[in-house]
Image: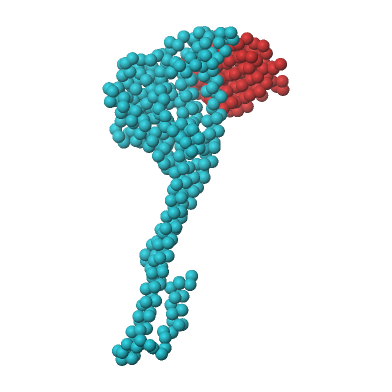
Length: 332
Length: 125
């Protein structure tokens, strides 16, 4: 009969099967969300391209690059970090990679005597740094899968405010680094650490050079410098927003991969366990046959008065054997 | 000859199409209208209404700050908070307006935003 061991195995197979159904569903959901996330990345591109172009035109039009958000500070005493993680797990190494990169950057600056200030996006980053007793400046969460511009603005504002305060004041920073996962393709996502503040002057100068130059002189209203003053914060917000959208797409891609691996594992495990279960069942049947044969033999021995009869006239009834095998499931 | 107009928000392009005239409100100079052949122009926008006169009618949007760039008969309006009039929830805007009482900076800005939304919605209907 199905032994206890076999029953346990069958039960495990069933449980793995239902786990597999769940991971498979999550894989499919993630796959469909990647497409949506990618569309959001693409939809956000015109704005960031245009705002960069406008910035270039302003620089070409004579807006001085002496805005505080463009000023390098020396020495840098305190560095701000914006770490963008997810709110949920089950995405393979997605969260831990970006969080570790952030932590490593922080420790590297610390080793050189610079203090840190953390601006965290996503529940996972907050949980990690809080558990390890890091000092957390600001933490935002609840939107990681579908970030809106408003969410990005909050994070960017918090970081900009600290940067504007400067390290001489409580909670201020001299430099801000942005750590997030860039979505390169369906199969490749890479954690990057870019300097957010002060903004790279080169980027603006490149944009200015890429413009039409003075021959296409713009009329400005108000002065270029004043427009730039309004534009730079929007530019910073835009960069944080773009990073969040990339991170959201990467999260889904990582989750899809992780869930696919989980589904494949479940399948493999089910196959192996089924083999083991079948072996156990076979062993059970063999044991039972041996018992019956042994029992019949013993009976005959008792009848013949203890003599071992190696050539009995009547072989063990074929009916009994068939019946036993049938009951033990050998013909199933 | 028409203007090529794009109204771009950080999340998507809200409107893209041809127009005869675009009217918006800049920070320093009040209302400005652009027709074809306008000189290159770059300005910061005030919270207010943007009107795009198209051959077939008018497209109205509320913008809360932003920038406008005009060049070679292309008008690009960038705004981090912009809504097309047809997407504006009038009752919500009215509620926002009535809630934003007071004289502090935030309340004044909120009231201006709500009014811009209501104006845009009114023009559209």
